[in-house]
Length: 209
Image (cartoon, rainbow, N blue to C red):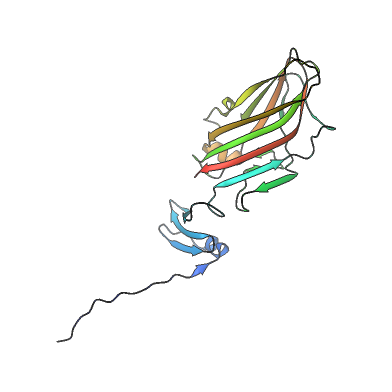
């Protein structure tokens, strides 16, 4: 009578490129190893299992500096007219090449999937020739079901006509389906008089998938 022995087997998967992974048919539960990490298909989408951070995870940060609106060429905010803050992204710094949270051509803030969580820092300089009566309202505009306009602030101009002031504010938000499909935009409205902004920076971080 022959003896049956327990035997262990070692299985080693191939390491593919991310280009190859993206060319595969989406099959629920599939596992693929690439140079960027271990991936699986869940709910019809590729999900990075390990490592959670770094290139390809979708988490990261991006800084978009406008190079058009400067101290010698300021973005005018006419009284009571809502103006898109059109940051041209002339200088961009990314945590890694896989992140993209802003379209410098449409001036739209982007998002990858519904219910992702983001933090955005908005920075610029501002002034008005009628500081006593003027304030600027900043808002994030977009989304069909979520009132993103509540992400904003009223920016006062301390006494001093044509005096330069610094604005820096951090916002946290999740994205709805309309935000994912159509993007959103930072807009500004000057009330009480005209004003102007320049040296604009958007710093955006995705903090949860």
